[in-house]
Image 1 (cartoon, rainbow, N blue to C red):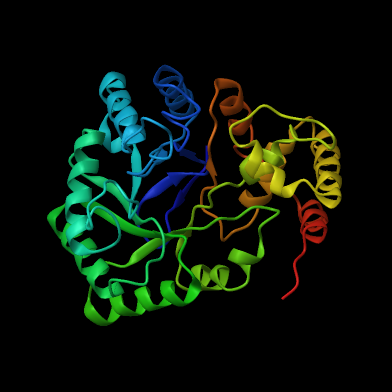
Image 2: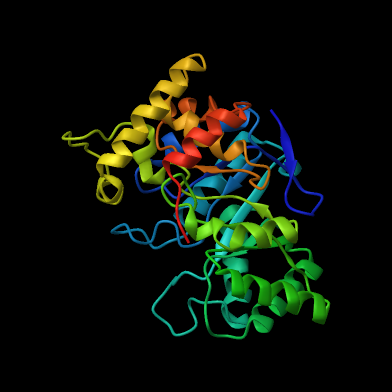
Length: 321
């Protein structure tokens, strides 16, 4: 297992990050615990979650994924310092006016709730879940800075920020002497490249931000289970259907052939290797909902594409400005 520094911080994380959006949604608690253990035993020390997971599910109040992780940490008795726990704040957690967003009042309450659910006294990486026009970025950063100074948060990161807002945040931190974002969590995969590559990639490269892309398998489309003319029974089928176009089915064939030529790798492993072969990427976030999927994703550990293999996939999914 290769470990990488998270941006310019001294935090070392595994080359894959275990995402937990599916915990309490498409994976029940016993399965979630098995996935966590399987990933940890394979060398993954980096776990990503969010307070809002998975509030969109009927009967789920949010915070369920954090609670599942917290109970697993307690039961597994893995020393806390051997795990890197990342969670996020911004999602609506109740019906009140201050139960969501990036205001100081919400952040200060949300971090206490996340710490309680996770059963820990600190969060390694606390991330702003998405860009928000209000409040001013300085208010959000000051709240984050206070949490870092209090020892409740080790590092801070951003998710779903446009380049201009990310730059504004980096400048404000430098100007005011506040804790600064060390990472970005963008929506990035072979079929959604422009959103990150157009501007954000250069910002991350220039300012040495760690990059932990979510949905590297395009909501399951880049696993190869979605084929032309075939129906798949999956909670993510509607999202994956967005990519059901002839050129993307052709891409799956190309990736399948490439995996076969490299010694029997799956389409999803090739998709992950495409990101792992890019120096700007730190840890793609995998989101398995079964032990079988976890095993497949873990097979990408250490896998890299050579320049010609990467060029083929780059050209097949090229975007124009």
